[in-house]
Length: 300
Image 1 (tube, rainbow, N blue to C red):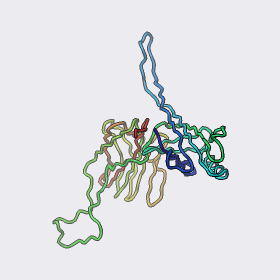
Image 2: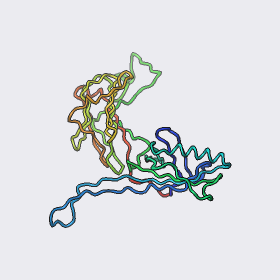
Image 3: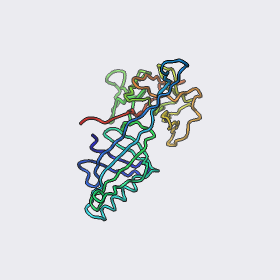
Image 4: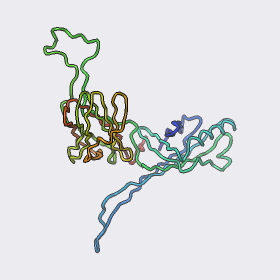
């Protein structure tokens, strides 16, 4: 049973909290985010028994939310209904937050209010919102981050450098990660895209990220300067390549290697190797992603 959710209008950033216990203005009655249906694509030969399934696609999801508006006076009820009417707009997406997960939907209609006097008066009013989820999967609210290549700081100020260093040989300013391979676990239900971030701590050329198992790769054919950053988003529907240098962000799509693949994180363990044509030691690589799930409701 879902006892509380938080909603946020993606356009206006307005927030609406619905709870069964502690919310004084709007009380959650029920929320039903249904289930994800699938379509199995298949074919068969003459006289074949059964069919051969070539693949399965996931369809959209419907969301139903019902609750109560609570007020002390008719004027207060009118004001709170006005807030609801502005919040749910079929042209504006809404994020539904539940525990550590988020699901985005578009309202199918404006708010529906009960027509019964006992459920729609100056002190209580029952309402209902129906939503459509083009992406039926729940995402984690917190983005996961993996440092494929980074420099670990090894000192802090105040720092005194003597003529006779202790230990002998000098002071370590930073420790470079020695491995060129990183393991990433996708604990979700489906393959997901990711944000690949290349950072240059010195001059380098041709940074790339390679899937060790499939040998597919993404490469940027550009010489990077110290302090330059390239962000590649491989998420379906959000694909882009942007670069930032001296505080100026521009489109780097023209630097994409023509044989590059928009790498995805498969369900389970993934192995990636980073590289560069020149000066790979000057390259830092970070990978950001959100696991996605079919269902998230838990027992209390």
